[in-house]
Length: 469
Image 1 (cartoon, helix red, strand yellow):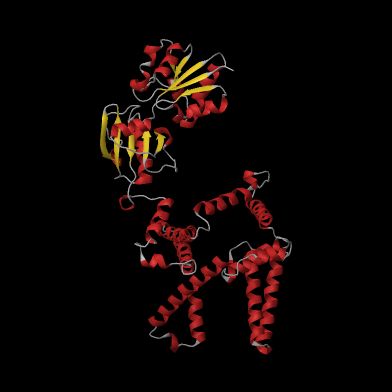
Image 2 (tube, rainbow, N blue to C red):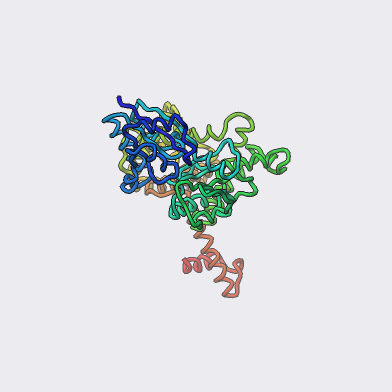
């Protein structure tokens, strides 16, 4: 197999090592990723036959496609003989080189000077650990963390795209260092696309910020804040919390999120979603403090479950409709949980659930074992039957009989809602809110007539209520 020699040219002509320079001089086929960098200019002087792949940039839809296309060109050349491929910066940081390594077994690499190291040197900064990213890989990249170096900001449009994403992640007032062959200066991130000149040597370095200096935050920042709050010098209230004490907060915040979603107010949804995340983050923190589990255990369990239960997406099962997908999920869940029979499946529904929600879920699970009402009419008839039994219990039964018949009636009503494809919890909540609204209008109407609620009979109040309804 023919050999591919990959050379990292660094950022300036002086970055090229003697042995790499010798490879360039002696190469019969020498191809450059681009001729548009300062480090590439010397290559044509060392080897007159050198040519570039600049034309590939124009026919590539995005950066990932570009790297694959660049690699494809080099691999095609390697079928005819040995090839020397030169890239700016460090070869090990170049994604086109990554694709070459995946497809070709005979590759020799001269890494070269990193764009990150060059940026830090020009900024006069020292940093042993940082995230490094090409400007073309920034957008929609959720893995970027501080300290961060973005290199190859080769134009105003590129600078604008980089700024938009980085300000979303870190805020627009973040102090950073802009470096290039011309030198280095400190700017705020919002100024990134307001410079006079850009070229392939332009990079930006954003140092790590203290919690109190950050404008935008990540999930890891949340855990860092909780660690501070629960430290000896932190907040007395946060230090006192336990898995049991925080439970009411989890329930309360969940209901507040439900109300926010129903209101349709995005600001409320953002706030209440954050509050729910905070409560779950507390439980992760409790686990980490006790060395029982950590955030990675929790996320691994969640992501693994999403993959193993969506076998119609990540496996061989098929599901064209929502009901089919839910059946696949439930089948895989039963396998994972190791339920030996239907009773175990029903018992697994948490008893701490709201009663209506639990009744609906138990009914759904029973239906998976073919134990269900055959039609809506059948469940309607069951409700009528339960009403009659409740009447009898009220006339001649004990308190316990009455309670049991009340439960049977409610359970049948929940199943009726389920059979017509609606959510009983939400339906009852809506009706309760509707009743409160009508009651308020009823009360206002009574007061308008110069009366109070206590002065009217039940029938008189009901007549007014019916008119309002």
